[in-house]
Length: 212
Image (tube, rainbow, N blue to C red; front, side, top):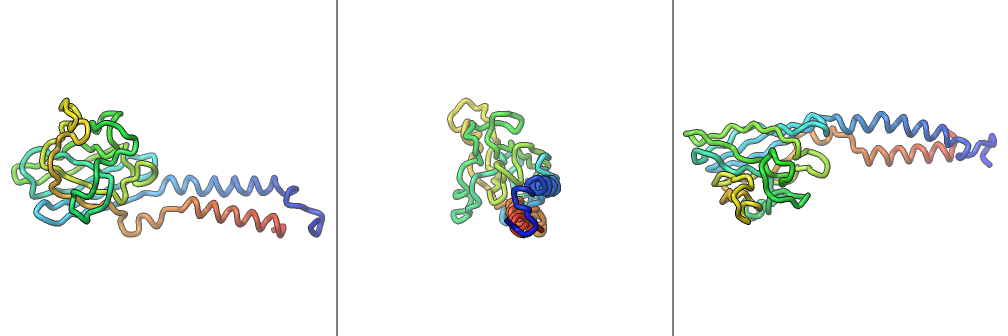
């Protein structure tokens, strides 16, 4: 028995309260931090997009500009891979972790990456302002490291009655793409919950062994 006759088991109540206190402090911090990302594609079709998510409970807001388009509507989607080794063709299909059919942003059953259409004016410029609650900058629907793609044709939102409509919205070729990445200083201020829990376990172990 340790000096003083006090064992780790006898301190278990204190350890539990200490652990609860730490978790109460760190879990809300991990959930409420704001995250920011950017996506940039130079070229004939130029795309610069900004993504903001105030907390894990909030929707993602996308703003920016796309130029060099034909006037009219163009399909606009998050694709599964941030792989540009073969241009936009290597970005894969729409980001669809739930294996749903293609749909509109308003549909409950849709690809996570289905963001509908952006519309270019007579000068070929589209102003982007989208708020979407299905994509995220954290968690299972995280779009960081994936690709944003603008297409040649309008997205029919899965209402075209064809197999292609159910998969891609018949949006046609891929005009431009970019990889979504955290803005410098955004990601690294986010508390790492796993690291915190590991640290908590280490502190509790020291408490038990040394009676701190």
